[in-house]
Amino acid sequence: MLQTFLQQFIPAMEEGLMLGVPLGILFVLIRRLPHEDYRKVFRSALKWGFWLSIFLVAVRVGTRNAVSRELLEGFATFITLLAEAVILSKFLRPNENFSKPLKISIAAAVMTLFLYHGFELWLIPTGSVVAALGDYFTVEFLTKIVGFVTGAGFAFISSFMVYKAADALNQSRLKFVFVVIFAACMIRQIIFLIQVLMARNVLSGEMWMDLMAPIINNSSLLIFVIFAAILVLPITLFSQPKPERLPSYNPAQYRKILAQAIHKRRWGAGVVIALLLMTTTSSAGSYVANKQAEIVPAVPVTAEAGSVDVDLEVIKDGHLHRFVYRASSGEMVRYIVILKGGSAYGVGLDACEICGATGYYERDNQVICKLCDVQMNKATIGTRGGCNPIPIEYTIADGKLKVPQAALEQSAKIFQ
Image (cartoon, rainbow, N blue to C red; front, top):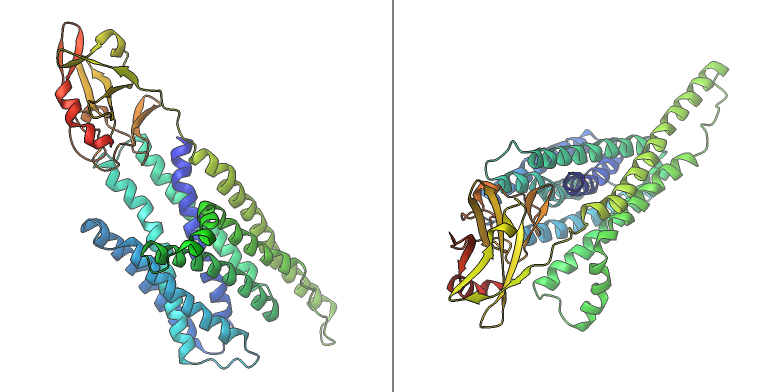
């Protein structure tokens, strides 16, 4: 169950951070602008982005992938990069001449961040709900939902602490942190955009492949670039000089100001603790979450008189058993057998119509799809639908489970 929990917790945490941290830093800067219009634009874009990302997830699921995930996120990333470039240029100018282009850029950046990371965030629980096929009161489903809620909640709390720590900085130090964090986010966005363009053959050639191959192979490490950028925030806060004592301050007033400054620094300590938890979860936690289950090798079987037979004594223990038959075309056709209860067996190919021939394994006495980690309902193994194994016909006779050789031969194309 820990692995199932982490498989939902980690992506929810990472997508939540990629959404919440830049929005939090941006809002601190916007709050310090002299005009309320910028804050209104930010809040409106936040609402529109939130609901639009949920709507697009609903459309994608309800229309069976009518919304292209790759194109949507690629377009959103492109617009986000343009908007972030305008925002950076405006805030870094010595003479801050804020105007309509800044308002448009703020709205575009906020909404498109939601269209990418918000979209990815809502897809996590949606995938669990769809995969459950209405069976929502299982330990595995509830573990997934708890993992998502906990991960998203931790990301929200961490982003709030980043916001409060940034709000404790003076303007020059805030701009420095803003540039560092936004630059880290933009690096990640540029890499993703290049990947989309390569997938669409807009960028091609050995040069791009040689450049991007090591980055793509280590893409899971890019989140640590964001963590490193966030670490700059508490370091900058801790190194900030204590408030200057003005001649007009009496001792009591100055002590109060110092106490407020010390209190604000505690948010920096909170960010450091959150970063330690994030780093541990994204490293050691990812190892546990992505650890592949050891799959028992399939037992070779052969056909005699048009039938592939397995002794019932071998398969009556209630555990998952895998067998492999070499077809006349040379393909290794795998199938699984499990006793469901009484004299009923679940028999199907070691493949499904959704995930292909990736196979199944047994975990905690449950049958699990190796690719999508969905738990099978033993009672439905042997029937079509969802991520269930593709059923094959069989008979029980003379103390053996008999699978027609012809059925396995016809299934060889699935394992090509």
